Amino acid sequence: MSTDKNRATAAAILPLVGGPDNITSVAHCMTRLRIAVRDRSLVRHEELKALPAVLGVVEDDTYQIVLGPGTVARVTPEFEALVAEGRTQAAPATAPASTSAAAPHPAVTSAELADRGAALKDAQKARNATPFKLFLRRVANIFVPLIPALIGCGIIAGLNGMLTNLGWLPALVPALAAISSGFMSLIAVFVGYNTAKEFGGTAILGGAVAAIIVFPGVAKIDAFGQHLSPGQGGVLGALAAALLAVQVEKWCRKRVPEALDVLVTPTLTVLVSGLVTLFGLMFLAGSVSTAIGTFATWLLATGGAFAGLVLGGLFLPLVMLGLHQALIPIHTTLIEQTGYTVLLPILAMAGAGQVGAAIAVYYRLPRNRSLRTTIKSALPAGFLGVGEPLIYGVSLPLGRPFVTACVGGAAGGAFVGLFNQLGIGFGSTAIGPSGWALFPLLDGSAGMGATVAVYAGGLAVGYLVGFGATYFFGFTRPMLAELDSDPDPAADSPAAAGPAKQPVPA
Image (tube, rainbow, N blue to C red; front, top):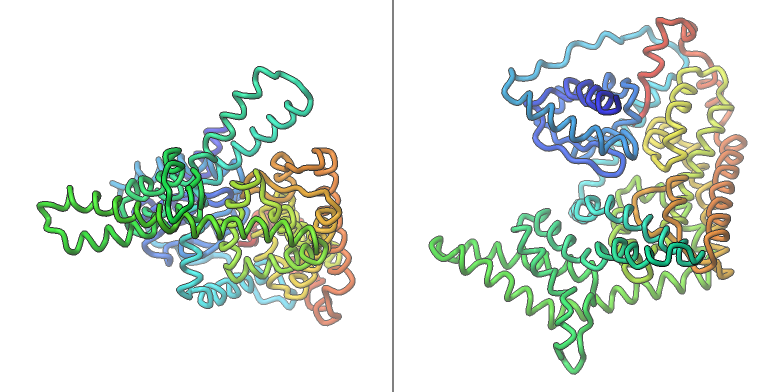
C-alpha cells in the first residue's frame, strides 16, 4: 500500500512539472526531490504546492520539491520510473490558464505571503549567482549524496557505543564497529569520485587519486623528512586531489593525440595528481583539517555561550545567502576526526527559533485562517528540522518574525554552547537531520543522558524565546491590522477546503 501511495505522489507531481519530456535529470537529498527541467514555464507552481504530500517548493539551479525525510527516498525511484515510461509519449501539454483568480481582498492571505517569499527567493537567487557561491553550491553537491550513508553509519555507531557502555551483546560490538566505521574509513574515495563527477572529469579517476590518501602504504613514504599517515588530509585532501585530477585530465584531453588518449590521459592524470597529493596536498590539507578541529574545540571550550549565540543566530541568514554550504566539508572533517561535529546541534537551534516564531504567528493572527492553515501544515516538518516551508512561506515574507526567529536560534545556540563550555561537549555523528530527527545521532563525552538533556533543553529554549520574541516584538500595529483578518469568510465550507491547502509555502 505504501508503494502505491508513493507512486501516486510521483504520478501527481509529474504532470505539474511539465511531464516526462520536460525532465532532464532527477535526484534527491535528505528532504527534497531535485528536478532539472527544460522549460520552467511548464511548471504549475501553485498546483504543485497544493499537493498534500508537498511540504514546499524551492526554486534554485534545480526545481526542488520538499517531501520530507524518508518520503523523498521512496517517491524518487517511482518518479524516475514514471519519467522513463513516459519519455516516448507525446510532448507535455502546456500549463492551463489559472482558474484560481479571486477578487481582491484587503486581508493578506498565505498565498500572497507565499508570493512575497517567492519574490524574495528570486531576488536572493540573483544575488547568490556569484562565482564563489556557485562554487560552494557545487561543493555541496559533492557531499549531499553521502548524507544517507553518514546517517546510517552514525546511528549504528551510536547504537554500538550504547551497547559498549552497557556491556550488552559484547560479541556484536566488533561487528557493529566494522559496519559503522567502514564507510568513514573510505569516505575520501567517495568524495574524490563525486568531486571529479561534479567538476567535469572522469569520476573513477577522481576516486583513484583520492584513494591514495587512505592507502595504508603511504605510511612508508618519507616526504621532506616526515612520514605520512593514512588518511592524512581527509576529505579536504580528497577534494583538492580530485580537483587537481580534473584539471590534469582536461589538459591532457586537449593535447594528447586521440589514438593515445585512452592510455596516456588516465596514466598522467593519476601519476601527476598522485605525486602532488603525496608530496604536497596531504600535508597542506592535514594541517588545515587539524586547525579546523583545534579551533572548533577551543572556540566552544573558551567562549561556548557567545559562540553558540552567534552561530545559532546567524545560521538562518547564512542559509538565505547560500553560505551555509561552506560548512558541509567542515562538518565532515570534524566527524572524520572526532566521530561527531560539535557545530550541528548548535546550528539546529536556528530551526527551533523558527518553529517558535511560527507558533507565535499562529496565535497572534487568530482570524487569518489561510495563514494558520499553512502554519499547521508546515509545523510537523519544522519540528523534524525541515524549515523551508516556515521560512519562505511565513517568517521571511512577514519580515520581523524572521528576525525574531533568529533571536530564538541565538538563545538556543547560547544554551548549548554554554554547556559545551562547562564540559558537556557533544555533537552529531552525521549531517543532514535537524530538530527532533537529530536525537538518534547525538554523541558526546559526558554520556548519553546529559547529551540528550542539553540538546532537548536547547530546543526548548529556542522554541520559547522564538515564540516570546515574535509574540511581543514580531508585529507592529499596522501589520496586525493588515494581517489579522479572515481573507476568505467561506473557508469553513467544504468547497473552500481544497484551496486552503494550496498556499503551502516553498
